[in-house]
Amino acid sequence: MKRLFSKVKNFVKGLLNTKLLRKIRDFIKRRKKLSIFIGIILVLIIIAFINAGSKDENTMATPTAAVVREDIEYHVKVNGIVKAANEQTILAPVQGIIKEINVEQGDTVEEGQILAVIDTAEIDAQIEKARVQLELEKSRLKKSQNEFETAKRNLKDLEQRYNHLKQIYDANVELYKQEAISQQKLNEAKMAMDSAYNEYISAKENIEAGQDVNLQKEQILLAELEYKRLMEEKEKHFIKSPITGTVGEIFEDEGMLIIKQNQFMYIVNNNEMEMSANVSEYDAKHIQIGNQVKISSHGTEGQSYETVISYISPYAKRIATNQGSESVVEVKAKITNQELLKSGFNVDVDILCERREGVLTVPYEAILTEKDGSKYVFTDTNGVIEKHKIQTGLEGSFSVEIISSDLDEGQQIFLNPANVANQAVDKAGADND
Image (tube, rainbow, N blue to C red; front, side):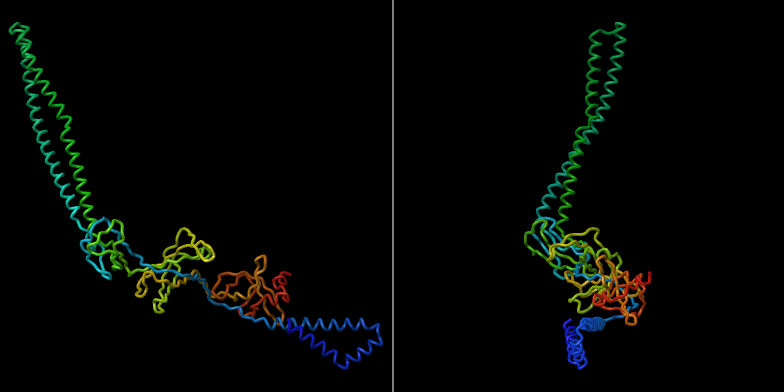
């Protein structure tokens, strides 16, 4: 603007210094009625010059670029962290003295391999006590069963004796009716029969109840459960590897007392790693399972790894940021056939969300967005600046896909449209007219 003002000033000054203008000035003094008319003409000349200079300067100062047909990609770039897809921190399953540790840090171990042993002296004593108790209960059951079998045999004998005495009594009743025996003889027969009956009924009730045998069986069941529990508890003293991998760290030494649930050893399988990253809620909507991912890190000596998104969290979580907090969604990708990545590495993650081939694109800086959200670009057609309403599609790193417009490949568009917006002809409006 200062340069334009200087140009106008020099132009006016030049006009005032010309011989022609001096003659016009003398003429005006003699013809005062014409002074207003001449003044208006001079003003119009100056305004026309200013407008022409302004238009030329704005147009010349605004750079242009061509509408290009190209492939365009939408990427989400975030920071992530690498960890082993299969890793385990082993906690002490029981409390006790560490009797032996069978591996060292860096050793490769197989799933199920015994890593260490916690002293079993105390549990062994408990197991022996439970074993003796179980054998004792079994012995008692055997004795009770033998007694039960004996009782059943006795019951049969008592039944036979009762039936025999009943027959004698019934016969004596007939004899008594015939006055062949005395009342005392009949009474004696009845007493013998009743006594045999009572013994039979008592023995029968005891056998049917089976109280001693059933109770003993319950005692054996409880003893067996206790013995089994102690054997399972002893098995916990032999700490085994839950996975195949490498011993990453050992937190305790032999001879030390370890508390139950304290960290004991860390096992990691570095053959399969996993990248985890948090993406913003805006970017999350563009990411799908199977999207291509490129992973790189300062620790991989310039080598990058390609994989795909394998997991997208079903929910968002809030995390703290420098500006407060934001909602993010966790995504993961498995990494195989790698040698340099280590669990805990920070990585740069490039997720290819979408790709379109052979579409018309323009640079971001060529688009003017108005208050109502409408978007426009401006072209220079034979010196005429035209305004084109557009719709945008896929957004790339440096350019945007253009759809639903009258633009053609190769057309020149202004990169700073605000500079030329006031000079443009509304092409869309003209076409509609």
